[in-house]
Image (cartoon, rainbow, N blue to C red; front, side, top):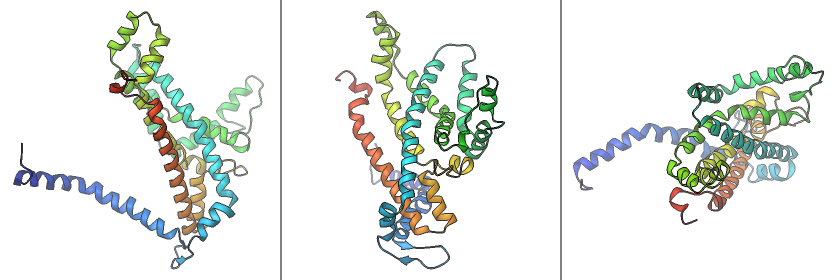
Length: 302
């Protein structure tokens, strides 16, 4: 064992900090620095062109009590997250279960399902604009073959948010890869023990597979919530918040205030409101994990 005060240990520590320094520098410059600046600007009236003017809690008071668009944006964002995240988890798990079998061309199918998750957000948004186009879009053209008149989708306030939720399922490929890793990590001897006891596939899934992959479900749930609450590119490219603010997500409203109206102070407040909202939801999920997330060493005791 190398003594803590030896030259070799000190050299290892120095080399470790040296290798980590690019990330640390980037974290300080592009994460911690902007957060500190945002915390300051939240208490000011700042339009980039003039010096910040201190206004205290006025921006927070406006956002929480005077601006109805903040409530609308949080409502739209919350509905999107509450519906899209469970759908993505359910669909991703179902596809992963299908891909976790011995079928011909399995590597090809895995690649096909994963590929959409690595495409550019703007390119995907433009693709789905064509799919949802009311007159010549792929969906309505297909429905027209059966003499069905499709809705306006993105141009209809009653269907716009539903369309965005449907589009979110395009990205389940990233979760599928994680589910596959979890499924393949379940010890095969557990399934053998279940078969010896005479249990069927349904019982094996419910009592073995599902408990064993709850850490993976927990991870995808947390990441899914954080990602869904920050949706921006799709809304900007496809609807720009319309129609009638049916897809006015909170990050899109933040963007408008910051880079269209140059209200940097007010936009900073919206950013901190979103940060607090995500933090509260994430903590609630973490607190609930003790009741439904099981780890291998705990299954026997539970």
